[in-house]
Image (cartoon, rainbow, N blue to C red; front, top):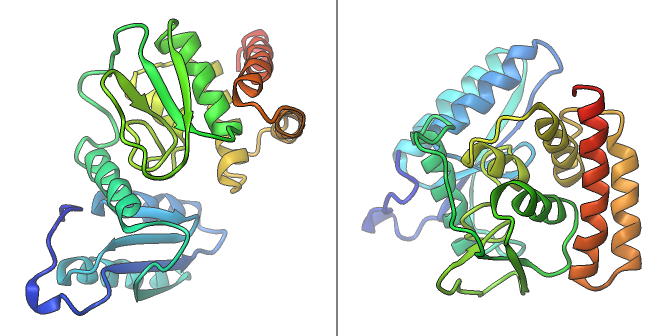
Length: 259
């Protein structure tokens, strides 16, 4: 089902979204992977760790009903709800997330041709940079666009200008896709296959998404360092400067132990 599927006119009075809210048992391990893959194929957007969203269409409802039955058959629980989002995320932001999920689903999670950019682009992100935006800016500068310039704007309503690329913000060219944080999306989209950077992506993911998916031992320490930087540096450029040093050192650590 395409994420931009139009709701029929006769259904215009219904809530625009369907939510699947589920809880999975710790075992079997394969169940979590199976559910994530199924939701990815459906093009669902991850709103929270266990909350996924699709447009409210009959086809989407049927897909989610089948998935709910499978979850419950394997010992989990799930409910499906019609929803109108009142606050916290806009419909436009949801559409952008669904569009990114749809593209990721259609590509099987990999792009046929890695992204590439001409040097010296302006990379735009939200003000108040923290873990994923700091790490993503570091990755951009170190591996994607050495001449990159960074611009910080309010989270909502900004329209990118020519030669600007947005990251980790609503509607961005590079942002969260499925369960990947923006740093991991950049690694995948630019086909950066590096075990040390992959390990850093897992650290960034767990701090940013707060789900302890990877559980690397250095994660708590890196999170503490970055929180200290955020408290000490109200200026975004200062946060990047100091954050880049943290990630340079973290990369050296993983290089030394062959991640």
